[in-house]
Length: 253
Image 1 (spheres, rainbow, N blue to C red):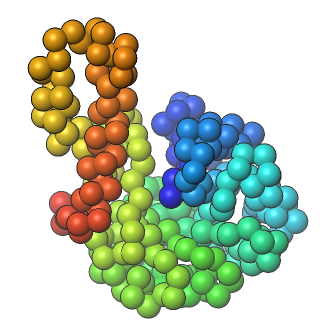
Image 2: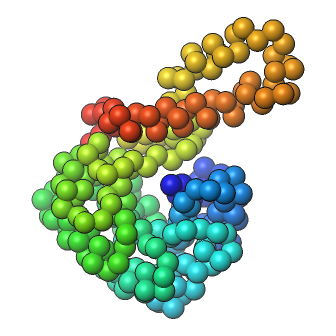
C-alpha cells in the first residue's frame, strides 16, 4: 500500500507545513503516483479544508480522489465531528482510513508537532477515539507519534488494522515517509524515522564496482545512481518491518 500524504506539500511542493495543500495539488500528486504504481493499493490523503465543513463536501472530495486520480481509499485526520465524515464517506462506498495521535493539519491546537499519549488522559482519549473511528466505518487507523505501549494496546484491542508511524513496533504495520527513509528532506527528521541509505550503500557500491563501463551500464540499466538507491532502501525498510526489526527502541517513544 502507498499513502500519498499531504506531507508531499512539504517534501515536494516546498510548504512549511501541510496546511496550505489543496485538493488540486493532492490530486496531481496522486495521479503521478498511480502512473508509477499502477498495480498497488493507493491511498489519497484528504487535505485540510476538503472534508471538515460538511458530509456532502467530504464525500464529494473523496469521490474525486477515486474518480480523478485512481485512488483506492482516502485518509482523513481526527475524531469528534470527523466521525460523521468517516461514516458518510464509507457509506458512499469509499474505503476510509482514520488518523489519530499527532495530526499535522491541526497540530497547532495541541502545541505543535509533539508526542501524543504520554498522559493518562491523552492515552484514554486515543483509545476512545480509535474505537469510535472503528465504529464509524473506517477499515484502518493510522496512529502517529505515540508511546510504543499505546500502539501495542490499540493494535490488540481493535478489530480493524492499526498502522503506526512513530507508534512503536507492535502495531499491525508500519508507515514511513519516503523522503525521511531516503534522508531526502533537509529541514528536520522525526525521531521515529530511519534513513536507510547508509545501510544499503555498501550493496550499491558493490553492484557497480566491477562494472567495466559505468557510462554504458547506466545507459542500459539506469541502475548506477539514485533510482537504485531508492529501490534498495525501500526494500530494506520492507524487509526490516516484515522481520520485526524495525522500529527498534531507538526509533520509538
